[in-house]
Length: 449
Image 1 (cartoon, rainbow, N blue to C red):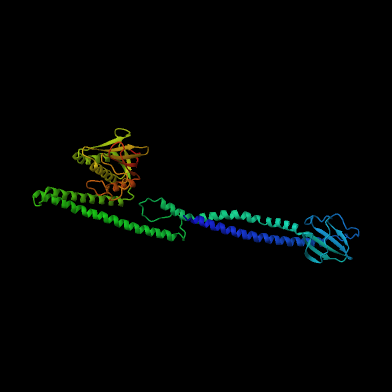
Image 2: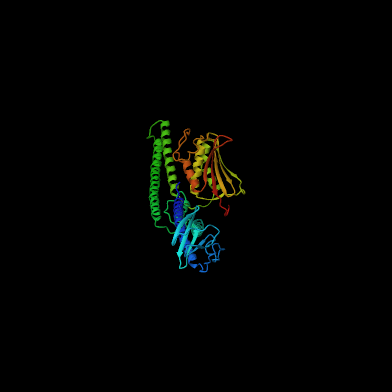
């Protein structure tokens, strides 16, 4: 993945390093050249400042005079009189040949020398210095000029890192603002920090996309809700008319045909109810949660399905685990209407897929900071390769028998997700059947909690 931060830092650091290398090269060579000029000036100064009393005819080899630490002890001083006789030589090394007025570069015995000579009224003075000494001193001076650059480089690196981080900070703010939003939120993005001009078009385009997406989603929800609502009323009226026609004898046909017709009509009515419930659930993305009794909801739903369970001789009951007392209401924060739809769908699936004489249990259990709801049945369960897909809308397993729309578990999953809970389906290991658990509702610690 390409990182803008790494890309900017890499190229800025590379450019800074190249600029520093070029600058260091230029500074170094300029300093060496200026050091050479300084040493030439030093040779000239030494030649012109030598005392005039060094004129004794027998002073061919004298001890070095004290020139107050001028330059280096490798400076060679030679003095000739008017007759061309060497009257002074400063070092034990052999005297250099006379090179003439001004600056010269000569070589003697494999060693290069820088020489300055000057003709004076009574003598000729020549001062020389080895190039190796001059280069060593020039190198030291040049290196000393680079230490500010060596200090500037890390300081500039830190400044570059800080500026890049500050420059990209609005992208981080925008990322955090988007990451903190719920998956269902389609509201426009409001960034608390000032947005730079370069990022403003991105924010505006994103907000425009969210507005269009929200409008399209809302239109889809409205269509589904309206279609389900419009279908429910005429289908219910059609069912009543068919029943009335069968009773008064105006509708003729075999009993099996009428039963199939009524069954298909009931399936269409059930589908319309499911579509309407799904549309309502999709529309309520951020419904405020309120304290409610999960135990009371379970008792009501179990009571509503008691006649259907009795018709199949199914033992339907409500079990309480980890109750804090006989009156434990299992208080949670939730939407009673939505949770009623969830539990009704789970009970409807469990009863329809359980065999005659089976058992369906609704279980409430407590955890440390949450409450869980489970529905267990004695049905055939779900194939392992389909258990991850049964919560998809309109999906029905290959072995599923009987009527159904494939929306019940999808609606239950949607309700659980809105309550920040998870819908988990597992085949029961100890017996046949399916266990559907909703983990975990936020516990309410207020009154009766």
